[in-house]
Length: 180
Image (cartoon, rainbow, N blue to C red):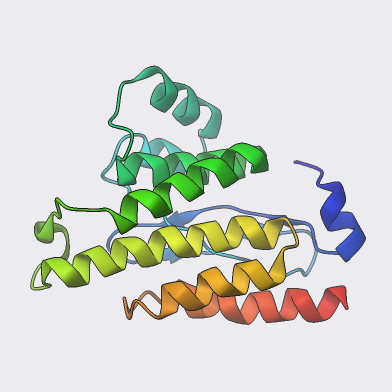
């Protein structure tokens, strides 16, 4: 468990369990009591994805940080973001989620085999939507509801078909109303 003083003031302490595979299966995040549950994305077929999905966050962080990956490796940054938020290191998660968004925006090599029948542009949009939505969750956890909404709206604008983005928007609205 992690304690975020900034959230105590808003009454919204969200703790995030992240599980959304590239196959777009989604597991809800969890939070204290009846607080909204946010969702994040994990690339299960990327480095340490399965370890993150199995709850071994600290091990995943250690393994990712001891390997040499290119600075813009989107899948690694995304998985590391999720592992950090789940492990309770919101500051590190925020930094790595931002790096994932930057990597998604500059993505050149696209594995269209991951999403059979989709164009490279559609696949890029899907990766950007995932990165933006994950960053939005981190902002929501911090109590930065307006900034989180901007990220969720930008993710939704990618028209990726990822249902967790709409779910996060709905849950953010609930969190915002509860904090008022």
